[in-house]
Image (spheres, rainbow, N blue to C red):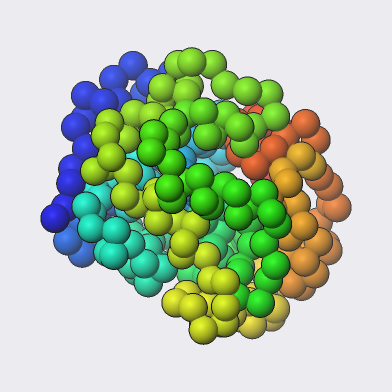
Amino acid sequence: MVVRIPEDRFADLPSFDYEPQYVDVGDVRMAYVEAGPSPEAGETHETFLCLHGEPTWSFLYRKMIPRLADRGRVIAPDLIGCGRSDRYEDRAAYTVEMHYDAVETFVEELDLTNVTLVCQDWGGLLGLSLAAHQPDRFARLVPMNTGLPDGTQDMPAIWHQFADLVATADDLDVGRLIENGTYHGLSEAVRDAYRAPFPDERHMEGIRTFPGLVPQSPDDPGADLFASARERLAEWENPAFVLFAANDPITSGNRDPMRDLLPTAGDQPDVWIEDAAHFLQEDAGEAIADRIVDFVDRT
């Protein structure tokens, strides 16, 4: 069964008054917000595709969207099971293949081209894989606090603790969970905005499943997709700018391997985002957006 989130759950969001739009990606709708110049303006614009991870939604990019929109068109979707997007009640419906196909269909339906991919967490697993397999649509990559786990990697102990909590906690407080992944903390209004898509357990099946979808063996579902993406990205020719937070215990170990994987990453500044943790868009969104705009300008 498909569940649709009531729109009144999203009233009075702080600094996020964008009108939601929707794309059919099979039997579910994927929601997104858009800012910047219209594609009907008759000109070719930069396109920023901002992909979030678990258990957030496009609201995560609210500090970055205004600056990016000064430079081009911004598209920020909600993954299936997150934000305003539809969700399945059956946990078995959530697979790596389903999420990848949904993002692929979304990009194809909007016919996005000249894309600068801005991606974090699961947004990186899915977005980088799509860029690897459809490189003609993507002009640049900006991976942030993410990776491409093909089942050969070792996950840090804190990730296993997080995965167990998300999958089994009787009362999962998404707002507090996200705050625990920030450096500076969150206001109550922002915590409530992250709780908004999850009024009850039947709306949470998608986020409950994400940790279990990370391949722990090369034989696990999704491992082949991410391994193939790694092989293709090892020959990536367009610009890539790797931006990781200095205070993220979950993904900081992926930062140098990501720079080594992408052949053009070494052409860009070798930087860490200071005073920022896993959800670096919350901790340093404006500064990161400035860095991305500068990256686009110089490439």
